[in-house]
Length: 197
Length: 197
DNA sequence: GTCTATACCGTGATAGAC
DNA sequence: GTCTATCACGGTATAGAC
Image (tube, rainbow over all chains, first blue to last red; front, top):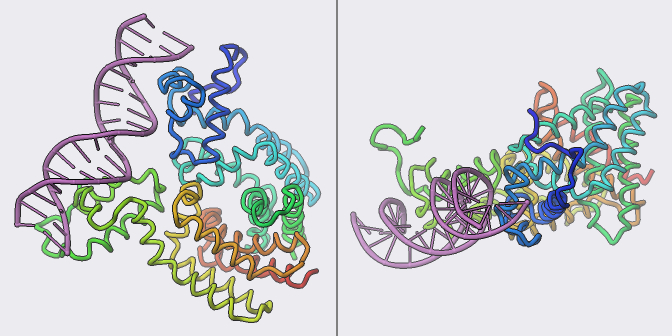
């Protein structure tokens, strides 16, 4: 269904309040979790009252939805692109490469989605995210391959996430080095799955 | 809607209330998320009042902590066992095997931890879980191996989780078959990491 | 020892004044 | 566009019935 808060409309001149709410909200949602972040906290950070937020967004959920719609386009475009490509191993590798890169600029949002899955599941965008992940796995996997190879494709995706979310703290490793290592492992996984072992 | 064991509950037998609170709470926490589950909901399900919960547990957090402590021992024992073993490839394989099996019986708790990471991070048990995962990765990984191999060890663990949490819905696949496929992929990952390639 | 009644304050949300 | 006032519900706390 159409989201209640249209994405980046043509005219967003109404001051930058709306944009600032999105920025602050995403930052707090990613750091403290969705439910632990109160509207009062967001409002205070912007020096307005709770009710002021309700002028720009219908609900708390609307805020995260609008953020999601505004900053998630890269993945959408990646999926559209991939659908038109031949399903070669090289295409799959490129998908992983681009996905990993998309996570850099959108890391706050990805962190939020990763750490708030229970919340996401009940949000209206949860279904969209789920579908997207399934589509990506579908694009990566090989038809009629053994189950283990299907798992490898999914695991490749999760490895990228883990490399971004979790492994960043594992050592005093350079984050970019960790990301590239995760990308290497993920690429290796789909290569095996593609080759059929 | 109001549950109530119809009839003048002859078999209600107040005395196992604490255990029943834990069971209902875990079920709801896993299904709806920690924050979305209210104490009122838990109480209603048991036909008691909110305040009754506060006789058995000091806070909401206390409930999940007690559940955690009661049902997480298998992993603790697994870690203790692994620490005393030689760090051979076979030991690592056995760790993955046991971990995967532990997730079967404790799947509600694992699902809760997996989907409520933002919440877990602020709970007192969050730190314990984090440390546990790091310890497991430490036990799986090979000293001085390339970064990619370190990632492989972590990825092996996450693959087991994914196989249990996420991939269960991917197809009308037998859950046990999916679990074994994930175990196969995970084992393959640490094998490559161990060998150094 | 086990629970109920009741009240407190914070939270998301709504209606209406400026 | 923003605020005040108000609401029902959230976790929490205490007093007291059995």
